[in-house]
Image (cartoon, rainbow, N blue to C red; front, side, top):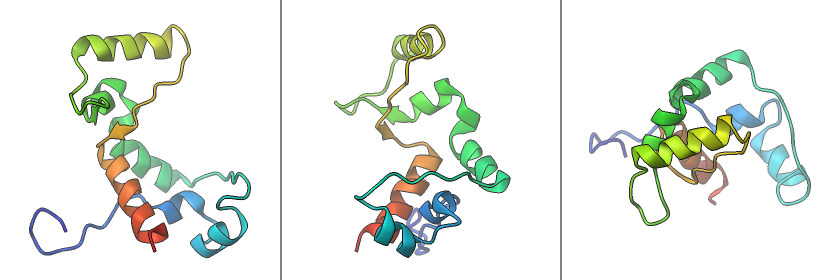
Length: 115
């Protein structure tokens, strides 16, 4: 539910948005656990996804994430992540992310695939 209002949470970006033009049924039947699936997303979905992940601003995204001990990333941590991304061209892994886009995708995944 959404903040105790009694309304169900409606994600602004869904798993179906990311899989289109494939349906969820086609994806689970033909790809899930079998082989990779690649597609491109439309500009509207890309815009919503970008907005829900703070327009890709690493500082903002990292501040919405937690470390594996549930503590927040410090300014030094975020500086190190930025240096890895820009200087070392390394992928930044933030698995415990609570950016609005991450919440959208987690909830949509559970709603779509959780049964």
